[in-house]
Length: 362
Image 1 (cartoon, rainbow, N blue to C red):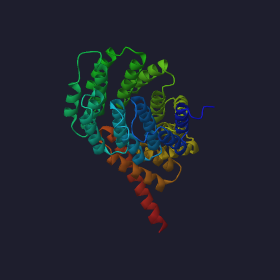
Image 2 (cartoon, rainbow, N blue to C red; image 1 turned 120 degrees about the horizontal axis):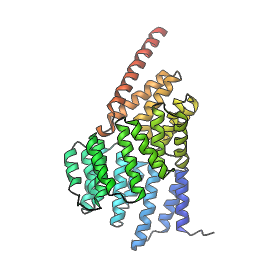
Image 3 (cartoon, rainbow, N blue to C red; image 1 turned 90 degrees about the horizontal axis):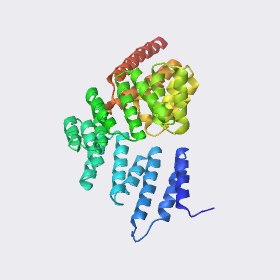
Image 4 (cartoon, helix red, strand yellow; image 1 turned 90 degrees about the vertical axis):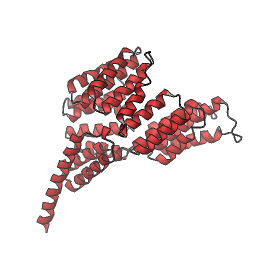
């Protein structure tokens, strides 16, 4: 009906992306960029803002399609398009490098962003968080604390501090920063995010009761909060608790975001815990093929457990080996040493068993 509508075409691309039809989605965006291109490069601010939106969507589509080089190229093209567009471009590049586990590149880009946009508070916090992850926690924390002004704007700073303390496993300080953020949270969605973060802090300390209470508090406000549906469902499934409800929660998250690799992994794990191994294998394999999840050590560990349970020990050992390789590439803040030790133990046991089987066959 309106074949020249930029908005309709953009929304078609968004639908294709949600369906996992990445090549078609990318083509629509590339056509839009070509259609709105001005050979003389003389763009109004509105033109620049539109092109930045198209480029950002194209970059996320390429990233979802495991084409990180093309994604970074698209995000880089956002940088000359004005302050806010440049800021979003930089943040997307940093996120892409982090997902690739290219921690130094992420830090270098955060530093570059701060040189270009020295007054931007969000970028200051992103760079500080990178420094903390790269082994300079006190420097990073000090830089974020220096942003506190004693006003209502401090909420975002306290959120950042809480997340940094949480990654450093400094739980009391994480909780104190979150309490201050909560006091400054006036909107419902702001409170909701505080409850989610508090739930995740409890869960990481293995305080499952209080964590569940917080996640349910979020879902009471927003029953379609996919992050919380997945987190609560996975936490329950992983402990073998309330498995039917865990499956229902995760299914709701997957229905709302069907190509999300983390949610597909949770779904596969819930099926595994329920003894439904075919469905488990199907979803865990889908998860491992999705955006960057093949390099996720938890997915590899889950596949190892599945193959062991279904009598394919050689395959199980290969996935446990991959899990350990991926953990070795990961910064300390994202690694639970208990998980690593469990996988090492499973792998050693599998190797002994496989060696015995080989010698028996000879």
